[in-house]
Length: 333
Image (cartoon, rainbow, N blue to C red; front, side):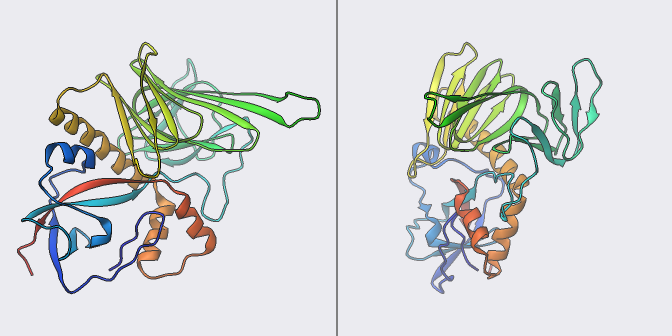
């Protein structure tokens, strides 16, 4: 059994001097920052100090174990791009939006028209509502550069515009500006904002009770009647409340990890931990449900197969995020 550590291969064989711990399945994933505030005495085990066999964790005896319980730090890839590991992607013009990776009950309704089932490769006409049912999802490939993923039980509409190209000087390079506004009634939306030389971007996910705005990077938004929540996995994301007043600017660095913000705020450490855990669980479930390419590559890697250069590069470009799971010393053999 080997451990794949996100975008870098950190391998170690399970040592004979290890203790077996089992996942406490009824306890959901939590953020390390919340554990530090609410459960500082339980040890946190680094990914380099364990190997995993399903729901069992073989923890090195050299790790800081102090009792029957521990937290293990889990490394998870963020949502993958639409572009496949071999570089292939749906053929969409810069001014188009295409529905791809349609899963389950996904419908589109033009203004004044009844909803119809979405077809793979269908072009979004520029107005209308997209909805997903339970255990359903959809990706929207925007201009061949950005992707929007819509989670279960979500309703959105999209406004996409291209301005330019412009030149500041007759002989200078041209620039283009693309703006994408995603209006959300409720549900889960993830955005991957790509980069292209000469293109500046403005991507906003907006609901009645908040918004998240970015010009590059990866972020996810969860919207309900009670709250607006945003998580940034890469880049910088500005979060505002329903009155367009700034709530936070989420900046992700190599050491900061996943950044979260919500409006209205939650008071109290335990209440914040509960809210963070609910949002984190929603994120983890969605990421793992839609990451078809990454899961296949990681499975092949775990079986000892050698990946191609393009496949390895694909995994290395995926942002990663961390969370903790509770484990308990196993009484079985």
